Length: 108
Image 1 (cartoon, rainbow, N blue to C red):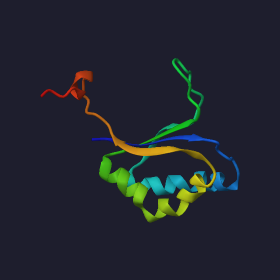
Image 2: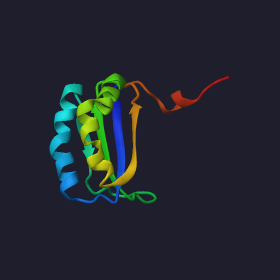
Image 3: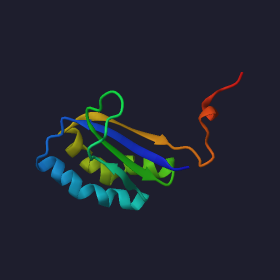
């Protein structure tokens, strides 16, 4: 099952730290087959507000996503992002191709 690393960043300080982070992150993703699906951009807000920059990285499965996040290579650069931005980040599994909205309902 595909897994995703998702972050919503705010107050990004586009200086040397973030530039170095961006220059180095691709190399940390490659061993875990991580690929950017969304990396910033200007969203067309259809409801509510979106106060940040969305990043979504896809991995083949949760093991690859967790392996990347816990890897020495990524841990070595993580502070470059966290020292220069605020926000939230998480890892989450996707759903299969046959998923329907009602699949999340639990019957007793």
